[in-house]
Length: 424
Image 1 (cartoon, one colour):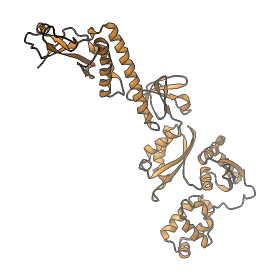
Image 2 (image 1 turned 135 degrees about the vertical axis):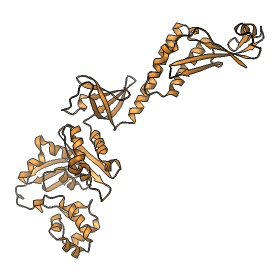
Image 3 (image 1 turned 90 degrees about the vertical axis):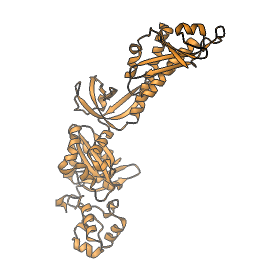
Image 4 (image 1 turned 120 degrees about the vertical axis):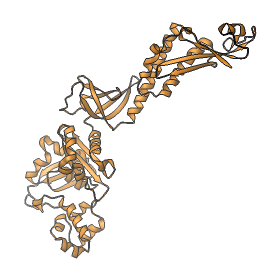
């Protein structure tokens, strides 16, 4: 049978340690384990052993109790005062104690002395801060590439301090803000977690609004087909706040990737454009065909023909004189983005000789969208270019190729999408 002895005087542990329960990102079992470990170290220094001590931690109140267990033995037979107590001493505490029973006695922090308590407190603060930093680093390390929403807390010349919902400090550098971004304290800001780095053993969480990941994640939020995996964002090229080009691909033939991203009357893309401070966004169909991808990337300009050097990743593109300025864009933005998107250096030339020539595309350029066997069928009837197919009626193509009418319509829609109405 065990009996307890509780000291009347007890230091106010709530005042001493309650603030530790306010630490963020640390779960309760971890907090209890740290507290237990720190106070057992204190006990070993004071008593030489912590074997016969029980530590009870209340993390919600910031309170803890330390109890020492000692066996009551006959007077004069006490060998280890830490584990045993004489019968005569025990009955002074409570008269009905008997030899062989266990005496539970509460140990207050006053037993350790002020210096030991302060040292333990410093150790505790150090351990918990270290754990909190590790947890925060892990938490945001797993969230790199995700969009977070925070509140602007402080603005400096080169960066801005943002607080998340848990009060964690995030950094949005000036270099990662869109040129026309303007925030004041208390404003809500959306950005993507770009990277997490450790500086002086403290995690530094860097946000970005100019990174391609931000636009990719905004598209994922706005376009359910991207979130569901039916459409993939293949490549992105941006000049933040000015213009962007996005190449998308559909894994379902029934889903038009460009139409899905733009939405009915631009409903889906408009929200993203507003978030990016009116950044104009061109959505194009991705293709593994380099020539076709370059052609699409130079939209709205129409290409007459091009020469591609795949070894040095360079393309010479020839256009009608009135299309050159469209290909280059204001300040050269269109051709820069096209180069980034295609990963090719693009040089634009005026095609004065071919000014009166008709713009056309070789049928083999559509190999990623039209099956090879269908292309061969079309070539067998003399249709080697897109316009040679479009020049024939649906009935004529069905008769000469034996393809189904639905297939012919699909082919014509694919080819037609590369031309203006007046060019067909």
